[in-house]
Structures are given as structure tokens and as C-alpha cells.
Amino acid sequence: MKHFIIILLTTVICISGCQKEECIDNPYSGTWKLTGILVASEDGSGTFGTVDSDRTLTFDCENKVTSNGDLCILSPYTDDRWKGEYSMSGNRITLDDCPDGTIRISLFDNYIILDYPGLTCYEGCQAMYEKQ
Image (tube, rainbow, N blue to C red; front, side, top):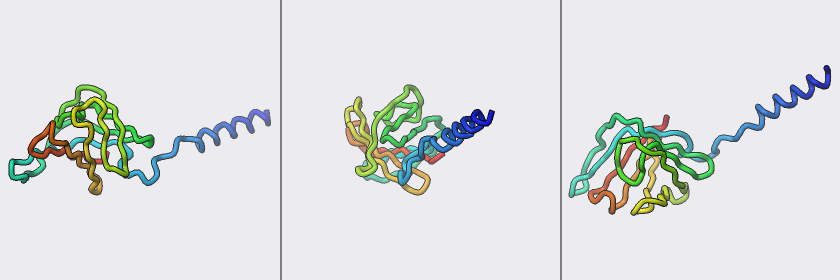
């Protein structure tokens, strides 16, 4: 019985202490919800409009990002599961199946802004996500 208790305690300690570590020094890690979209006018001006959307981005510790919507286009809709890779050093998401290939990421407190490139948005389009 004494051996059983020792084995049980060792297993519990290992399971609680061996959980996957959170991303250290990774400000993007976690889930972000779409809260605003900006489509600039021809002169480059514009403001973010509030959107009611269930679209999210989730960044993990292995430089992978998933979304419940197609990130190739600026849209509030949720349709497909989408996966890609991100680079903290280059502040970008690499899109394998999209015509433009890369979206820039900017971090502002509890918000990130995705800056969509020219082929999908001529006037300068951005999506704002809030940390959940």
C-alpha cells in the first residue's frame, strides 16, 4: 500500500508539473477576436468600423496560427478552418494558399492589426483583433 501511494503521488506531481509551458515572451500567443475592419479611401484615410463577428485567430508556441475564417480575404465571416505560420521577428503571417502570400501584423496593447496587401485590397485594408 505504501508503494502504491508513492507511485500515485509521483504520477500526480509529474502530470501537474509536466504540462506544456505557455509561450514565454510571445505577445501574439493566445486567441484574438475580430472587432474592427478598416477600408481606407483613395487618399489613405479611414477609421475602423466595429464588426459583430465570431472570427478568431489563435497563435500557438510553434509559430502556427489558426482561424475559423479565410485569412486570404478581409472578411468578418467564419467559414473554414484556416492554418498558416507566423514570424514574430518579421511581424508577418505566411499564407501558403493565398495570392499575396503574406499579411503584416502589428501589436498595440491588447489588439493586433492585420494589414492586407495590395492584390486583395487596393486602398489599404486592415482587420483589428482583440485579445480574449
